[in-house]
Image (tube, rainbow, N blue to C red; front, side, top):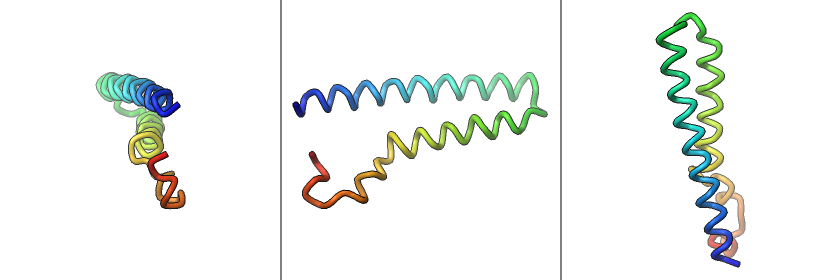
Length: 71
């Protein structure tokens, strides 16, 4: 069962990485073509920050009991 958790976490990490790359490329082209669209760029940056905090910083582990951190 532990192996399945690792595979799932790896898949989620790869999907989030692809999303972040796609958002970054989109931000670049929006900034090049329509720099006045600051609101759209801010929304994209907020989404990227959300995914980084949720999936790469593992903040949920801070609130788990100590014995359950590695499980």
